Image (cartoon, rainbow, N blue to C red; front, side, top):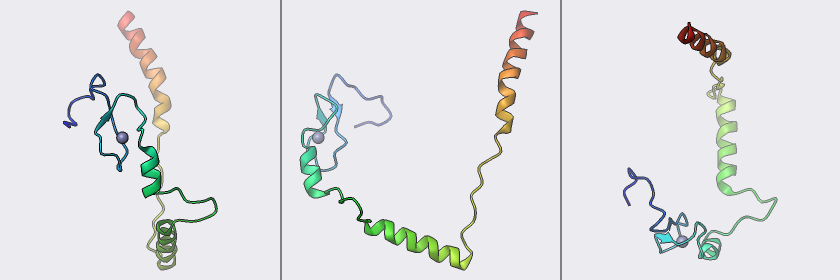
Length: 95
Ligand SMILES: [Zn+2]
């Protein structure tokens, strides 16, 4: 499948199920979704997956060592200037 081209839905919908052997189906949902659930069953509620436990341990270890940096959101206050600038440009185009 060429990912540089937009998907052609007349050929069918590309299947996103990793356990499915078919590349496309005539409808968006995979009919073999049950097979995917057998291979990778969803966890019952209240059970933490081992990968999440490992991640939490790693984060707490980094916090203890002081190597976890705070991620700050970029300052986006300038976005409030966009509507008045658009209005000004529109008025400049008129006159
Ligand atoms: Zn499928």
